Image (cartoon, rainbow, N blue to C red; front, top):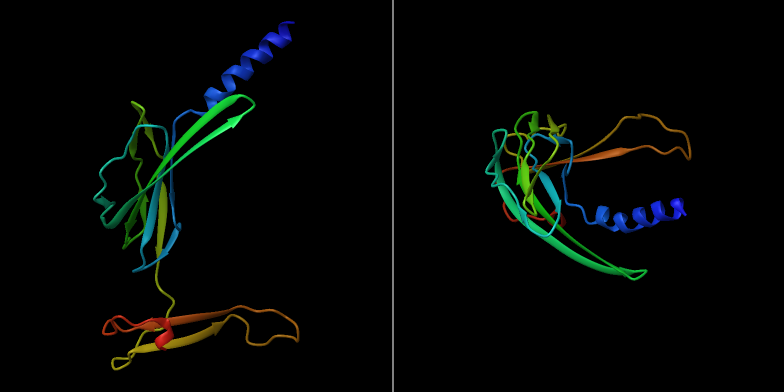
Length: 172
């Protein structure tokens, strides 16, 4: 009887754990090629969410922000569960290695903090354009010889001049 009582208490408390507020931060890539953009995703679970105003990340200017929101409701075994998730997406262009600091997000009246995230910026391996070139395609492979049926990886590098505007890959 005592075990049944404990199981019933756990059963009634468990749905409360599912509705607990939380916050999580992720990046689109932990390694970014110099000059490319990266995105920071701050995902908050809760009804009332207040994100911090972020204008720069460790010296990297924010180039764009957006918000995404989803609300799901489910009815399972006589119990209704509601979940609201709001995500703030922040685009930025890091110029050097950096650590995204911890950000405080207010969810349902309580403050939650994200974990710091490190980003490494590496130099581009793409070939440099000659002074009069508008574009350059180059294929590179680590292997110089392969056996019949053996697979290998070929990287395509595309370098475009700053003078080209409005061009699409189909134009080449």
